[in-house]
Image 1: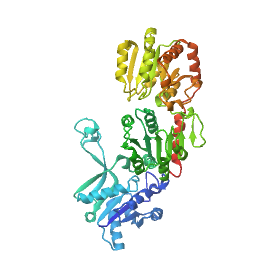
Image 2: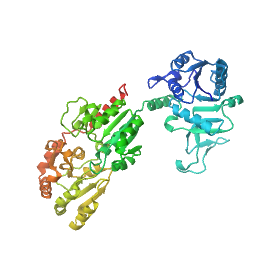
Image 3: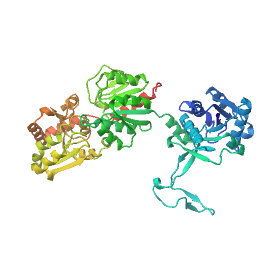
Image 4: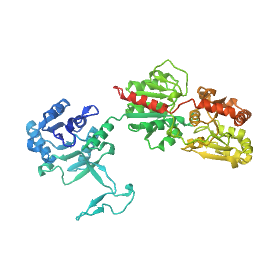
Amino acid sequence: MKTIAIIPARGGSKGIPRKNLRPMAGMPLIFYSIKACLDSKEVDYTVVSTDDDEIALFAQRFGAEVLIRDSELANDSATLDPVIAHAVDVYEKKGSIAIDIVLTIQPTSPLVTSQDIDDALGQLISTKSDTIISSVEDKHLCWKKNEIGKIIPDYSKRVNRQQLPDKFKETGAIIACRREVLNTDSRIGDKVSLYIMDHDRSHDIDNLSDFYLCESLLKRKRIAFVVKGNKEIGLGHAYRSVMLANELVRNEIQFFLSDEDHLAAEYIKKYNYPISIKVQKDLLKTILAWQPDLVINDILDTDLGYISALKNSNIKIVNFEDLGEGIKHADLVVNALYPTALPYSHVVNDYGYFCLRDEFLHPPKKENTEDVKKVILCFGGVDEGNLTFNSLKAIGLYCKDKGIAITVILGMGYSYQHDLDQLMNESDLLSNIDIIKSTSRISDYMAQADLAITSGGRTVFELSAMKVPTIVICQNQRELTHKFATSEIGVINLGHRIDVSEHQIYTVFVSAVENKDMRKLMLEKASTLDLTKGKRKVISMIEALMEDSNV
């Protein structure tokens, strides 16, 4: 069975001058349709039908054959059916061959892939159809004019789009038919099948807006986010990765997680990003199979074997919070939490690269008070050491006696709720404590706080951005390496939780509450930090990396 692909490409274009040769993402527009046909496994002959010598030149250089059409088939009133029939007739006579399937691919649909072509042709054969037409779902509340020109609804009932009856619109990209259908002076036979395309690939270029949109889609990169997040390391990596993905959303994004990181998966799913979850040993293979242009690792230390495997596949690599062997071969490493300089030019490390979430870049107005009226306790998405319980036990009764309200922020991975409830009931602390679970607006609660107790991760910077004097208790050894959490930025760091007693928490907290000058100094030091530019700097570095000619 022989299949011919005809690409009709006139030289004249009213909306966009010389449209078929206009550069799009670095190549003439017609290049993309020719490449899709040449890459197809089902197309035997790729032919451009044109009236234009320059189009013919480029078509031949891109690997297509060319047929010059008659002038009467190249004017504005000429329809495609006779153009396609003419091209097939000429080609059959020229090559003394018999064509079985005739495929029309429009050069103004540059997002059509060889897989689309193969799938459409396969569907034509399997359904025993005469014609197959590329289309896209088009469920909308539509209106129309009746015979007297009155505007009337083209629907029976106003319902949500998902509840409307199925309706499809031709994309114009692909029409395939059996050879004998052309003998009826049409490409549309009696039995028609629809090839439903993804919306992202269904655009046809009629105007400059279409052109810019398609060019933007062609320039998209594939970005794989590899993320960890569980009860051992918390959810900070998932928070940051989603934030970065939101900034890079113009690209094709997918998250890859180990099955051990179900907490991170649960968080990411709320943002409707595609996620691939595999056992750890299969994760690398799955990432490579997706063929990303860039991998962003937010998994702490990386090993040399993993990074080398990505590098050998010509993938650009960005790592966050990485002190492992893999750091040597990454393209960019952002260690905003680790101030120690490393001997690699591609490693950046200081608070200037910390990525604040948008709610902290556009914070609510904060009222400064002389006295401590409200305290906030927040120990991340997991709180592995149950520092919420320990801190509340240490300061709860004092705050109640002094009329200080306490806001407790619990993350989605907090697993000590029973202990916390028991403490509050036994100590009669309920009257002045507000428990907030899995909030998406923590900045609002920080803005109301006059003092905070937190762990030694990213929340320290967030509280600093909100100008809240902060006491830090480190959850683990790694947080001890976060040297930014010191008195230099207005923080009181008590060290590792296993070395911090309930009495010590109480003593330091009371001192901070009752010493206005201490809190004032802490605020002054925190105010010296400008954390508002970090995310933009990191995104710019990632975008520059993707612009590299090797990507």
